[in-house]
Image (cartoon, rainbow, N blue to C red):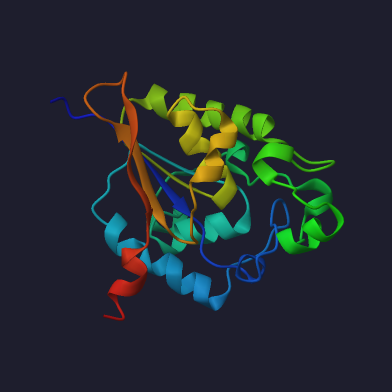
Length: 204
């Protein structure tokens, strides 16, 4: 079997708003101390990687995660910032919890309904498609640091599924996921998803 390239996704560590389940799109929050610890914990499982391309969302929480994982400029890594990797633009729902949104809009679903004055799944999917095309053009292993909802859409589009199918893929802070292929480049697959083992290994 040929040695096929992979696309590894790392969601940023915990922030104040991720901890309190508030939609965090373009608000540029730093990691909390717990999130910094999570980001450092990703360094061990990523240590053996030699990706041909390392990408990050330009938002602070993703860049901090990349740096604490050992893939920032201070480690001599050419960390390239890509605005397409930014989180879903939640528009009027920025900073709000799902419960508070449901209080005024019962039954609202992000992946189905999108956000007023923000993005819908199709728009996020268009950004994800550009990231997929960029990763596949390298034809080598790629590592990226990004955000929860965006990575879920990205995985759906990697598989050729509609962007809103990302709703089926839950993703935790500082989790590691790997997209790749089964037998050939015509068979994209999810090799690993929402791996959190590194976050508990140190406490065992």
